[in-house]
Length: 395
Image (cartoon, rainbow, N blue to C red; front, side, top):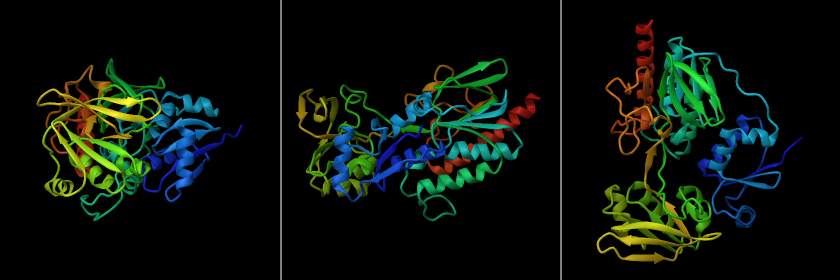
């Protein structure tokens, strides 16, 4: 049976590209409906999906949701069942190395390990991680300027030359030890066994975890101003955060939205140039306020905040809440076994080894101070070499 798959997208939307890449990786044909310059198609998408975010995906006229929804369906195997897709990747009994994550750290680790003639499995929800949704990279040595997806493609192409096993579309849910094996489990029920493991699962957008946030996700609650900002033209919005991403969103949305309120718990931590731009803009600033709840039924209608100085509560009438409060390490699956800081970043020593022998952590998932693409790639290589040395000395 042939299924009708439709993807409403925008040309600049990184999560649209991720959704399309996932569908292509499964050999699925889809109709792309580009709403970039077409307000009528944009409104059609909102009417059909009841959401104000891109992408929006439909299978046989059923609304699937956005990229995160598609990824979750894929990770649990429900997407394959819905589309009648059978079979899974055949796995050998034990790999020399299992890598969690396929961003710069994970792909660099795979490349270095495979060149040491280790058998390697890479398990990841997608290819690229944060880098796959980065518009421009201008600080990677030797490449003056490149888009994130283009750099990811170069990483992947290089790693693919060495015959690694990839399990993409899998959400990792657990890390355990069985005998001399480190075992990675996934939401779809797979178990991947390795003599060593490198955790390179990166970081995800942080959530506020307040009432109404999850219920209204996509219905006024958004996490990507670049992707979804244009859908709030003429609307009233609140932006939560005080770092670079929040202030960049405020500057961008001041030219799109009817009214923008920027809310932060304390003083801003953003670069001075961004602070100056916001101060010179029509953005309303609330410093020292904490979000308490997001209101609405079908759409966001308001946001309640508390003044940290006097405890007073205020309700703002808004149509959208943009959450830009940074990133949190994607480490939940490993925290039962490994030591981590309050941000969920896994503690490592100078050799990138965790408290569990034969398990290493590289890139944004570990507690290293600096988070950059070049550092993640370097740590991936370093962790792969450490895993090789571990195997050599274990016999």
